[in-house]
Image (tube, rainbow, N blue to C red; front, side):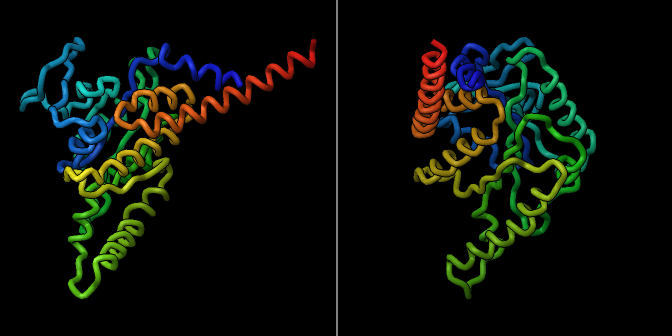
Length: 270
């Protein structure tokens, strides 16, 4: 009961929600984040003194994991970017692990890491890299949940496309390949993701991507252990009113339930 009541003070405890985004080059990370924040603008990069650099450049790109960035459309989302492990450089893996450990030990809630979005490009030639396997096998992330995001599923469909098959059959073939060679291995590792989402056509402006963004938001919220963080995450969803209303209703029902119990206990002891 105390956890539920404490959750309503979440906004006093936390000012923003911090996400580490990991993924190979061309995994569609920037497109995804723009969809999440409902913007076409470039992000605002922050320097070491937390001053906003108006836009990224070749000298100060968003691929520095220690340099946070945000979009002006929703500045309560703070992102960190890791370029992934496609180079095979073990130091990159160690840098990501060190970043997660550092944020996990942070005593200031403003410095803590709240979630990890790990983006994968489904490629039938090589679904998982060696360092990606090590990331999910060697060290856990504590209470920080990982959500696996399979981007560019439409590209995988093109890779397996057979002119002799119907469109639905080609989609099913790509889906089986994804599940057998990427999803199943990931969830079989020592420290698996807590959830996964499959995305496609995120670059299109036809509005169909909104359902997938909503799914990512919902699964991220469900993966959070701390109820205060869950409430915070939902509350900063300025572009996902439906999710906000759903959680507001759930929390109001819980508050009503516990309020009824408290009144009953008080009446019984009177």
